[in-house]
Image (cartoon, rainbow, N blue to C red; front, side, top):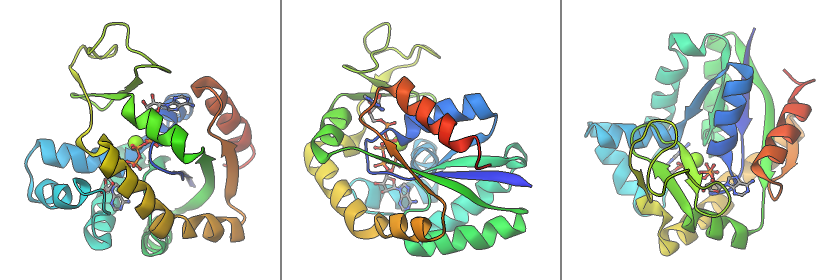
Length: 218
Ligand code: AP5
Ligand code: MG
């Protein structure tokens, strides 16, 4: 049976950073809804252009297109053993759709690590974040700096600051998270899937906590 891990948590808490590290350690594919939308935008697809009208304001892209995009992605060969989901689901409707689609893929949500940190920490982390243009590798000028300023350690591409990391958009993204995504905390807790992780630890310590907690869950 395939294994699916959903990383839950507010903007800037470290979902992408940890999903990438967990993917390396477990061999499961890292599926980030935000990265998929950004890739579509880079390729100027209709989906990318549509998503951008929501993302630039810090709002969620509508459920129907988001669910269709994830279903398509999870159906590809590299997800046969399962996946680490980063940024999906983000609404109760997406969580329901995920359960249904995973039944088709012979699986279910095995565990939902919920990483948390206070709002002021999130705002600071996002203000200091630099993202790689080619593949979305994530750096932070304070906590996780690249070896060379403005250059990705992994592929040498340019590092940029995401448009939606502007202070006012970050504020809106956090509001949207509080309104639309926090109901999932109760949902997954009620289903016995939630694992609470302290996101204030160092990047390495968070990975250690995650791996430790996941050992008995998958
Ligand atoms: P998305 O790209 O998913 O953004 P997000 O959820 O707002 O989260 P971020 O990517 O900003 O943060 P993160 O938790 O991944 O943190 P990171 O590891 O980078 O979504 C963007 C937009 O797309 C949404 O607003 C929406 O419009 C749309 N969208 C996406 N999914 C959708 C969905 N399901 N439905 C509808 N719309 C959707 O870390 C942040 C920084 O902190 C980095 O600099 C990192 O180096 C640093 N850092 C990480 N961990 C630590 C640590 N432990 N200590 C110190 N620094 C750390
Ligand atoms: Mg992310």
